[in-house]
Image (cartoon, rainbow, N blue to C red; front, side, top):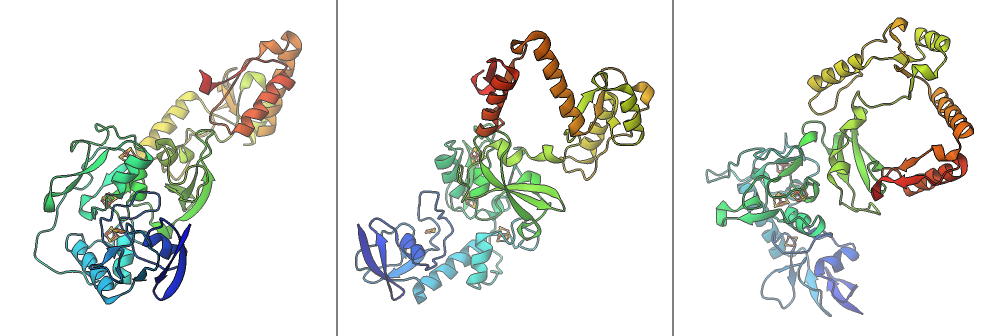
Length: 408
Ligand code: SF4
Ligand code: SF4
Ligand code: SF4
Ligand code: FES
């Protein structure tokens, strides 16, 4: 069933049960919001969305008021605009004047509304909060309660999306404080570090700790990708600056997961630039022709690294880069040919590595039969990759000994 109402002199049709906000948005009419997010339950906390409704005694919150048949709404009445300006001014009376250096400038709903409504900075000598910065040792989430506008979006995101219910408001009046658990540290309160609360915070009160100082929204390029940690297929945006990943931001239009991500998807990206990461195949020297190894290492096509060199490189990297964003590969130069032992790993090209594996598989199958193989598939692969793995195992290796790590 649908209803008809008038918003800003425009007659519109909306589904029965829609709020004024939903009806307006569907008709392309913008109403400012702060505590509202389409993924979350509406609570009508911030009063930015107030509108005039003919016949109503006071301004109504568009996010919580159902649209009614024949309703006449004005979203830009003098009273509504004045109320929004006053709300913004009140928020700024207890907000640091830090947009110039703030991590989320350019990606801040409060900043945008203050701009839209041209609210001047309130210069007063009254009380402002002076909360401690970054008071929680959670390795991923940076808290700046001085910027909190008490909208409760983080509380609802944690409760309704992650089902953890970590955040709540404690104390009263000016002492109101966003707390984890019973005013505990986040991890002690049971936080899973999924970062959903950060993703839904409309301002810079909750931020991604690993990304601080690495680039604001207008300085990064967003690249949509699929998470490589498991087969669910969550999508998100890699924020890239100077060819380095600075952050992961979830995307509302991600088909599988929407804004939700787990801790690995949101914060487990530092492996990408880590020097320990294998970017080329390694083959034990004993599986290769020694003369070819000598020649290719000498002319720089292949390389050999001792374990000691790799450990040293890893330590150097850790010291140089606390957050895994080292700019260069710190590995030492290749060791002399005389130091290459049978089990030494040789960094080869892909063709050589794959030919070696194929040759060994063929030999083993010929000598001992397919049941000499056992294959363990991975939840980090997509369904399609695991399907191919299954076909490869049964048809090429000729064994049914295949299992999947998720079953173990
Ligand atoms: S949270 Fe928003 S309004 Fe507050 S300082 Fe940062 S950019 Fe400015
Ligand atoms: S990181 Fe996730 S689990 Fe922890 S408080 Fe935020 S939303 Fe809740
Ligand atoms: S931390 Fe952010 S989302 Fe949570 S109440 Fe404060 S401003 Fe709102
Ligand atoms: S958006 Fe409606 S009250 Fe906050």
